[in-house]
Structure formats: C-alpha cells, structure tokens
Image 1: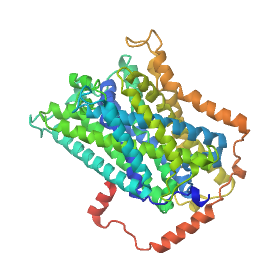
Image 2: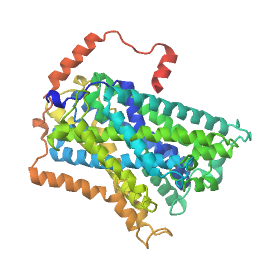
Image 3: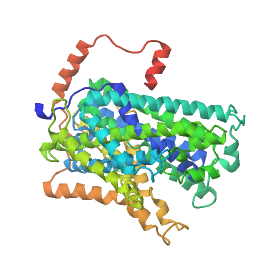
Image 4: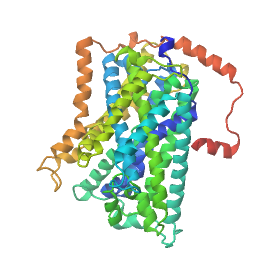
Length: 529
C-alpha cells in the first residue's frame, strides 16, 4: 500500500468504542423497543436481547482474533478474502456498502421527522433539514479521522449520559418515586403477563413471541461489528481492538438489557399509549420510555427527550457515512472496486470513496414528498438481511482462520487475543445467525388480518431480497474471476505481519507509562467513557 492510499492511525480504544456505540445505540433501542414490547411482552424482549447480545459478543470476539493477528486496513472484507474466499470478501464488502448507502439517508430522513415534533411539515419542508444534516455529516467525515473520532466521542458520551439518566429514572418510577407514587414492581409481569402470545395461542404463541423479539433484538444490535472497519485507523490495534470489543460488549449489554427490562416494568404490553406510540415513527412520542415517563405524570421531559433522540440519530448517521466510505475504500484496496476509490488526501481521508458514498445520501429526499415513505421503508427493510449476512461472513472467515492456524501450527498462545469460546463459539453463533436469517420474516407465511391473503408477499420480498443479491455477488464474482476457496495449509497468515510487529514494538517502547485509570471510581468512569 503506497502513501497515497494510507489511512491515518488516529483512533484510540475509547473512540473506537464510541463509534461502535454511535452506530449501535439509536432508534432501535429508544423507539424499536416499544414495538417489541407490544408484540411479545416484557420477558420475551429481555430474554431475546440477552441471547442476541451474547451472540454479538461471539461475533465481535471472532473479529477481534483476526484483527489482532494482522490488523488490515480493509477490515473484515480483507479477512474474508485472505482467510476464506476472495468471492466471499467481494460479496461481503459490496453487500455491506449497499446496506449503508440506504441506512445513511434513512437516518437523515428520521432526523427530519424528529424535528416535525416541533416544526410541522406544513411550516418547513423536511428537505431543508435533510440538506443541512447531509452537509454537516459529510463535512465532519471530510475533516479527518482525528476530528471525526473526537466528535463521535462527544456525541456518544451525551448518548451514554442520557441512557444512564433514563435507566435511573425508569428504576425510580418502577419503585414508586414518580409524582403519582405508584410502586409498580413486577405488576405488569403478572397482569397482563410476562409473555404475550404472538400469532398463536398457548406455548406455541409464547415461543413465536420470543422468536419474533429475537429478530427485533438482532436488528437493534446491527452495527456493533463496525469495530472491524476501524482497524486500519486504530492506534496500536493489538491493544486497542480487544479493549474496544470488551468495552463495547459490556456497555451495549448494560444499556440494552437493563433498559428493556426497566421499560417492561413501567409499561404493560397492552397499554393503549404504547399502541398509539408505535404509530408515531421517529419522534419522542414513539418511544416507550416517553410512555413510561408520561404515564407517571411527568410532562416536561418528552420535548427534552426529543432533542436527545435527534442527537442519537445524527450520531448514527455520522457513523454510517464513515462506514460507507471505509467499506468501499477497503474493496478498492483489495482490488474489488476501482483503485481510484483507495486514494486518500493529506488527512488520510479516502475522499473519492467518501464522495461516492455521499452521493447516495441524496436518497433521503425520497421522503420529502408525501406518500413516498412506504417505498423507502421497503428499501430500509430489506437491507436488515445484509447485517445478518455480514455476521455470518465474519464467523465463516474466523472458522477458516482457525482451521488455517491449526494446519500451520500457530498456537493460541501466539495470539494477542483469542475469541471467547474459540471456533466452537463461532459455529454456535453461525448456526444461530443462519436460523435467524431464514426465519426473520416467518410471519409472512402465517395468515392474519393484515396479510395479503394467506401469504404476505411484500413482507417476504423485503425480508429476503438480500439473500439472492448476496448470492449473486458471490457466485457472479466466482464465475467471472474463477476464484477458489482458500486451503488451510496455503492460507497466507504472515504477509504484512512483520511490519505490524515492528509498529507495535515502537509504539510500546514510546508509551511505557500507562494511562490506565487508577482506583475504583476511575475504573467505573472508564467503563462508560
């Protein structure tokens, strides 16, 4: 890689963690939790968020093991190409980029919808806000990784403070500390119940409810894998990446599992206010946390909370555009996209990749005219599958990596970081992700009043279209390029490793004095920030 295609190493563990959280903690938790609660009940969503969170930990651990052996600027796209199959790397990279060129403008649209809480559509066209937000995130990404990392750290810190405040408030309300002094406890787990049957009665209905909430939880966790995108810009990645993975996992588990548990204590799944909120799309009115706060007689917070949601969404949009540009840059580095897209400027920004990715943010204007929201929601729905396919590809790459290590006699002790449960954990997570991917839209096959006859073809198409696109990319590349699966004994485990070893030694020699937080208070603060 020459100087004109080099990224700058300007991200520390705390910034990488915040970037991951900026992409992962957003409307999926603040708003999407309400839909899951209304569909499946409080126990179902707590169980599903905990299980999927564990699977996410296995995915990130698998990614971390590869990233610390040879930190590659091309991220998990490069690992798939090098350790498993060049066609897998091609399909993974392009499908991931396709996912985010739709997700990014969708975030901009959501931000404009949030502002309609204060400024009605009739007064100011949402397109004006979309244009302002679009220019802002493009500018932030263009200024370089140091500025981007610092900004995302600040935005995500605000997000964490808000989430801690919400968790404390929900706990206080559940214990009767609200204005109405209503001590709820586990009242709503007893009546109407902890599990809400879904699309069937009895045990089958409760099982389907848990499984449906698994899909909701999976969607909420998508984005945590973007730690793998930051490898090429991480300072001392063999120390930074493992720490970022551990911090990201514990923070997300804390915020997701605990917050959905507490909201389930404060809001029953059959609440009329919750059903009304689920029709409100992206404003504070759509959040089950606001339902809990309003039900307790606190009326001033929804407007403040709406501003927090706006920060959440803009932080996610900023991270999403970063992912877009770095993903197509990675493809160019691997020779799977035009080489021009690998060019970087003096700040280490892949400006051509950023420019191409920024063009697709114009898709956000599809929602300016009334009636077009449905079309764009279909686009946003089908890319969810791509997130699962990315996890599947990462796990497949890790399994190939471990097999190659064993075939070439590389012991676990030679690694800076090993996946928590090794190759067995990757097999388990892979099976789980495949099952979720194949059943994520199972409701399309079950007749109900909202279906189109006995088969909901719209749900089926939007839910599963990602699979044929992914397979077309994979087999199309394999046929045209005539690639082969990488054999474990011939897998290249060492090219570039000497340079990484040298960089690590130089970094460690120059940073002998550790800045580890001292004392219990320092460690607690470091856990969240």
